[in-house]
Image 1 (cartoon, rainbow, N blue to C red):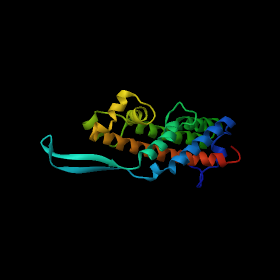
Image 2 (cartoon, rainbow, N blue to C red):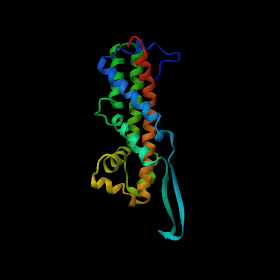
Image 3 (spheres, one colour):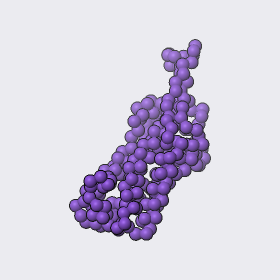
Image 4 (cartoon, rainbow, N blue to C red):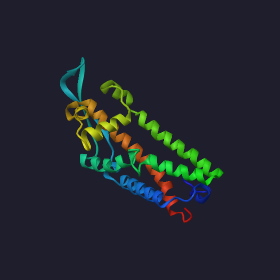
Length: 214
């Protein structure tokens, strides 16, 4: 989406932004950069399985499944900014920022602007697809029933980190065994994927904000 390397001048792609729009873009970019530099984003999450000697389950050997990754403090710190960009109704959400960029490109009315609209729509579709399908979905289907990444994120945000919905809290209880650990792994995977998408949007936003004609 970037125009910086041999592409058209940004003033041919976008119409000038209002002060309110620039404030939203600036806030989005600040949050993205905070997430990029977070301990959570710089860490990895891996699944750990330990064979339990002498224990069987479902006619076979039993395993203790867990997740090795960032501390809960670093996860919650990242999720504080994450949910502001993830929740579509927030002013500085990624969805709102994409709409601001698309509307500006439409107003510009150039061929370059129209191409940018298509690129931004494609980015939005990628984010929507990530909302609906998780790469680890087949494992989760077996252990927990079919769930979308949006449902999994909602479980953790509202059942563990920011609210105390009793039904959702029960689904991510530490007593939930392998199912909870796979849900945790899916949460971490989804959040990192969103940060990567938002980083790409943020690079364009950064170029826009630096452009003297916009």
